[in-house]
Length: 177
Image (cartoon, rainbow, N blue to C red; front, side, top):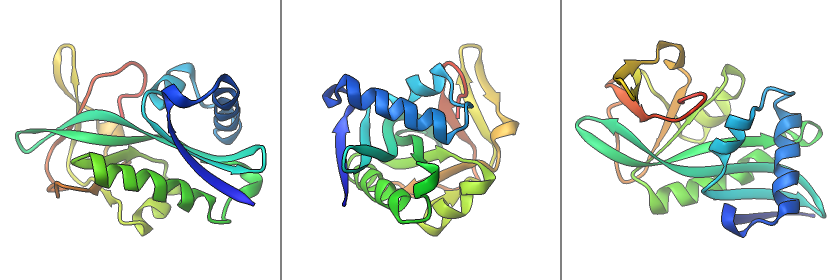
């Protein structure tokens, strides 16, 4: 029987953190870096357990996105994955349901960056593809991130953005989106 648990990073034990990292390394087939791992930490995690096996994970961390003259408190999804042999069984939806509850209760907006393969999953849940230009507030100022145009999705919470406008994310090491 599966169980969904939510917990802040500070409340996860070493064994749980190791299980999350192992799941993400396997799910992203070796394309999950230490910087990606760092982005996943510091927020609320949703974990799907089947007995003592972790089969699904996602986290929501706080970021600031600039849009229409405002700095929006944003719940940014990171490290969303389901073990390959357990996909298409509702586990990803269970992870998202838990994380979306956090976004709706604690943030102005939800956001994430996704692959083309997973875009339909998010769109079916009400996430909207950002249609306007994306940028980052880099140490040298605002810079365009054309390579991220079309892969950014938002979930309106207390703010409904104009998805055709400019969206600027805060700076961080590694992938900024």
